[in-house]
Image (cartoon, rainbow, N blue to C red; front, side, top):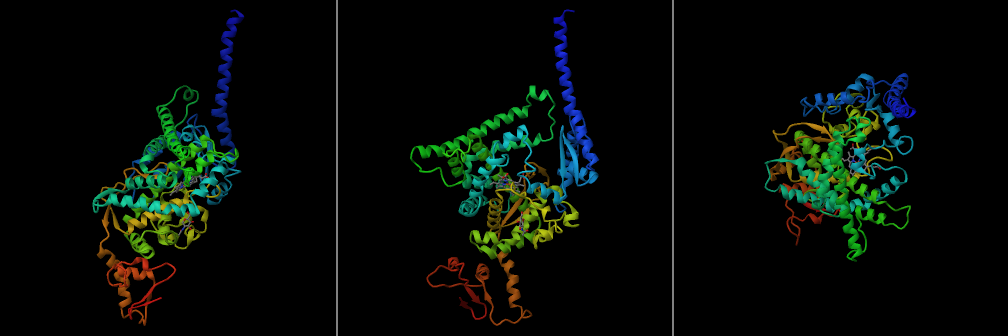
Length: 560
Ligand code: HEM
Ligand SMILES: *[C@@H]1O[C@H](CO)[C@@H](O)[C@H](O)[C@H]1NC(C)=O
């Protein structure tokens, strides 16, 4: 054999050998070494399997669990939506090691440890690198970025979604809810998928408040983001086969690239509209909403403050997605739970009437809705992503799986057996949710306005099947019946109060003074007639907030 021939055979052989060694090193030696070191420190877990890690097991367990029927009153969501974590926690302890393909994952669920990590998310425990598909979904948006880019973007988002800016959004939220309520006219008593209704509402709200546009303008973006997130989630436990995944793109990858491009174009179009308005002199700034702030930063002359185009587009995508999906779920599940638990629906309604009467929600009242906050927290306890912590009887007690908002009556520490770090549906520390106040404000407004008008019951057609996507979603929607709140219903509602007052067994009262809210209640049921000179019969505006108008029930006189 000539030297040349030998070379022709030898060189590829060498390449192959080196490749093989590297492959075995990455896919066998490294994982086994990590596993050994962890094991020797007492951290156990399901053993690594060549290339696939535990992904095949996860897929099989999820498939099996998904066929199990679920109870509507005992919320044992954990074994069904995260069967692998549930089973491994039980087998290996609260902190264990598992394998997403060749990637080692240390799962921790001990509250103190979780708190430690999240509080340190800036330095010691940065966010994991997004997967290829994950980065298509959120790009260089706030959820993904690090270091100075994060500081820049977080500052803008903090400003846009808190304080005065948030307060200024309230009328737009109320208007969006009104649009939804208009749509419901004529649907009373009929079956309605409220989850779908809240999808439209939340899309409308984030479009209006953050992007100064209507839902229609954002509709294409929402649809594409929705498809893209479904693809991303479908692929979380898909193993990427080495070499092959580099040569051949899966159908999901191809589609996600198209969606990514489509979303980018739509977002650019909305941005361009703003720029055009300024260029043509139609507007003298990019606007006061979140988009305006972003476009402003994109044009900043100071390079340190400037946002890149990639950041700008990523940020828009992030807020379209995070601003809609999350609140959609929260509202949907809360209405579902209130439809089942009529006692809490009643308590919530009572509070809403006490706070707002028949008026639209206002900022001071929204901040003071305690019962509703307890209900929303209890709902988040059931459906937020911190599933392992939120289902631990050691933290919450034996009634952990029941819907019991009263557990929050005296704060989180009391509810969690003094492990306040066990409840953080919005994350903890520097990287916690920037939209928390926005989300809860929006949900409270929508719930208040619904409770003021409707009683809710669950339709027999509803099939309980929460599935884990970006949050927990009802796979088949939420079919509910909304019944117009009858005058009589309100009457019953307050009759008890009146009864107690008139009941001679109750303490004999000389003169019972009512706060403005109580007056309103009796006005509502028609048992108190208010005649104020020169004003219509429904003079809600004669009750200024700083001037508690009071009425003496016995002498029928107004005080104050
Ligand atoms: C019920 C509603 C919501 C829940 C349960 C929720 C939950 C969370 C959680 C747990 C995190 C932390 C994620 C992590 O540590 O990796 C987070 C971050 C974030 N959320 Fe929310 N969220 C909600 C609503 C919203 C809304 C309405 C918006 C936008 C208007 C939003 C925007 C964001 C952003 C941008 C981040 C990343 C913050 C950062 O890394 O600095 N969220 N959210
Ligand atoms: C509800 O949860 C939030 C944290 O997500 C907390 O700040 C608030 O105090 C809780 N409120 C009640 C009444 O439990």
